[in-house]
Length: 97
Image (cartoon, rainbow, N blue to C red; front, side, top):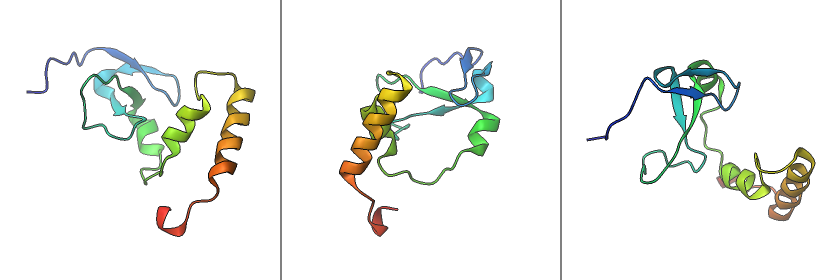
């Protein structure tokens, strides 16, 4: 039903960088829709890092990070673009928090 998954595969935690077995990790979908699995490649968090993250809704944070070039550009360019976009969009309303 879920397809053939090789649970013995080693994955790298995106938070701490440790390499762990797939069974000792949790899937992370930066698009926020882990149940739509078609043509998706997931990133992973080790179980301790997964427990440590805030599981509350983050609004459009992932899309803002992706649009800012997170993980694809140097730190200075990312921070400059992130600040521009965040300023442009302004503070979230109370209903969006």
